[in-house]
Image (cartoon, rainbow, N blue to C red; front, side, top):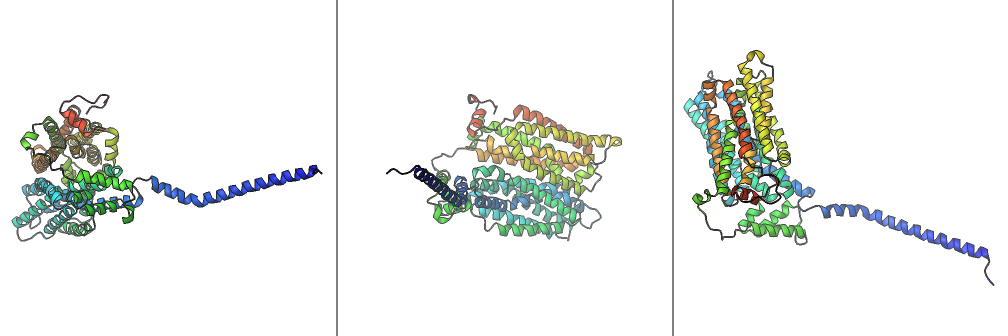
Amino acid sequence: MPAPDWFWLLKRGCIKDSNMTNLNTNKELTTFKTEEKAPETVADAKDKHKPLGLGGKAVFRQVAMVVLANLGVFSGGMALGYPAVTLKELTDTTRPLYLTASQASWFASINAISCPLGGLLSGYLLDKVGRKRTFFTINFTAFISWLLLALTTETSQTAMFIQIMIARFIIGITTGLSSSPVGVYSAEICHPRLRGRLTLGTSVSTAAGILAIYTLGYVIRDNFRMISAIACGYSVIATILTIPVPESPSWLMMKGRSEESKHALRFFRALKEDEIEKNEEFNKEFSILTKSATPSGNKKDQKVSKIIQRPEIYKPLLIMIGLFGFQQFSGIFVVIVYAVQFSIEAGVTVDPIICAMLVGLTRITTTFLVGYILDKWGRRPPAMLSGFGMMISMFVLAATSWFPEFKVPYLPVACIVFFIFTSTLGLMTLPFSMISEVYPQVGRGFAAGLTICCGYLMSFIIIKLYPTMVSGMGNENVFAFYGVVSGLAVFYVYFFLPETKGKTLHEIEAYFRNEKKVEGDKNPV
């Protein structure tokens, strides 16, 4: 007997409801499973797709070690700004012991003579004892220098002058020592994406040291020994803090200490011991490190007399020495070293030490912009803009002395601050950053060292001559001289300085050899 119609309708409805129930149940189970696994999946995906060395812990370790390595550079910055806040006291003729005008100029400039010695010594120490011990040496020599200044004798003027000169000579060596090791260390330990920003730490630390010494000079008036004692205490702390800094993996590998090199690289990449073998990125990076850091031993020694005859060496060498010449004779470092005295002679009506602090603050804030500007605009436009802005600043400053009846309050302060701002954008920072770009691998160390030595020598000359120029020419004509040099720098950059933005080292080297440019290359080297 066939089943009634209502039976089939009921059965069809039950099956439909059953299927819908099962479907909903499956969806609920799927949703439950998805919801249960989602947080873990998202977290795993983030960790999985983040490159090795860019995780939170790895970035923190790299940044922290670069900061600790830069502690010695901070001392160098304080040494650079030290004369600005102490010369007024040291040259006060009402005191029992004081420096003459000639002695004061030596006091301000003697460190520029010893800086090249520190630069040469740093190359030796980096290879022989490593990066970590070089940092320790930098902070220790700074400690000795500040201690000598803090304990300056009061027996006689001659004895005081000799002790101060010895201390300033030592701090000059310290400044030279710290010029390259920190940059080398930062490049060796940092992930490529972090290198550009972290290698600017040297410029930031120098500017911060200058600002710190200006601030101490404002808080502690007419007491150079107390200022030196505080700087000495800082050097003690900095020396202690360099103890936990790990050695560079590259240097350890060059010395044949492979296991220690792997351990150091593991620290900077924030990996656990049992994660090394499974991590392909780490093994690939360590393999590249092993090949690049191991000396080949097959390269023949080449004489300097032969190397310097190559166009790819002597052409950029002449260009860079010329660029350093415009940098120094435009008065950039004169304003920093003689900030207080310069402000007084410029007719600043506010506290000259406050003006000096504005100089330091302007430099440190502008330094943070330099990396972005050089990447965005290249080298030539910022350099020309820098020279033009410096020229305007110095000409306006000179005009305030030529035409005192038209003098505007606070205009000298604005001119000095704008001068430091525009100089930091280009002529102050660019020569140092381009040294690593324009020289080929063969002869780079020699050429860069010679360039730095010439730069420091010119720095000594212009700083030493500043008081003589003011007394002989008048401060307004000295300002005009700096303005003329800044203006000429614009033409020098336009006609001689190559654009290296976006160029490989091979392309730059080929340009100086007068070889044919790469086809399709629209940006001139």
